[in-house]
Length: 99
Image (tube, rainbow, N blue to C red; front, top):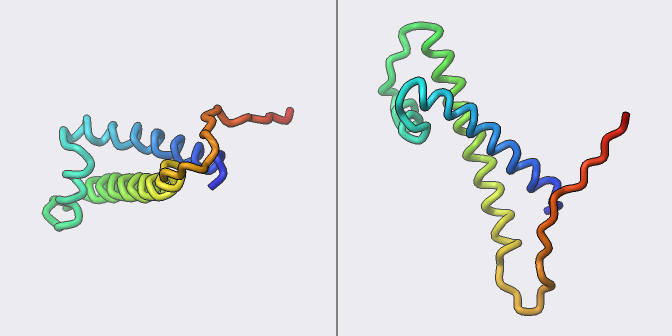
């Protein structure tokens, strides 16, 4: 996997974490625990605004989980032990801006 794709995954995960943190602080529950309640149908959602907010929170959590799984899958290839492999160079991605 190209390093730019990994970089984009990491940037996305951090952005999603910031959004999830807002919900976690508002409702005083971690997203993982919220999602368990959401999936089991145990959350009250009588108000439209409530249902919309819970739906958004669940969608953000699902997106984060999918990106994290993809990162973990791709990371395993990078970290796989191969005594004949070259050393890994960690460098920031190059950004090219066109004005």
